[in-house]
Image (tube, rainbow, N blue to C red; front, side):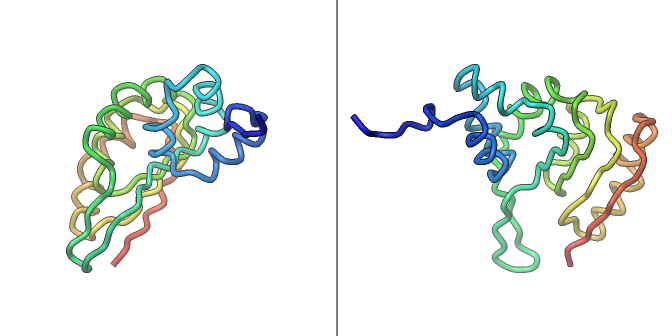
Length: 150
């Protein structure tokens, strides 16, 4: 039998594959599959820069839908983020899941927060609301990178 199974691949190859995948997809697809995948997914080097961006389907400029399922987001926020929060140094998040992700846990090592694909009005609301609260709550946050897609 010469069939190759993904489990036969060395950890180094699996890490390269995992790094090329969307983090949201990795969290919902590979977490709790087995101990080996958990070890690779929760490696502090991999989760050091937590990119929670998702693929957005854009039908028009004003009709954007986020592809992350609310149940998947809930699972990530309740089960995964509390486990890895102390390893996250850089966090990239979009408009839709920001509130749930920021409130899911304290991020004591967070030094960079990047906000992606925010509508201008919503960005202003967050800068005066939850983001402002989060910055004051987490004294380790050094800088915020704000990217607005118009």
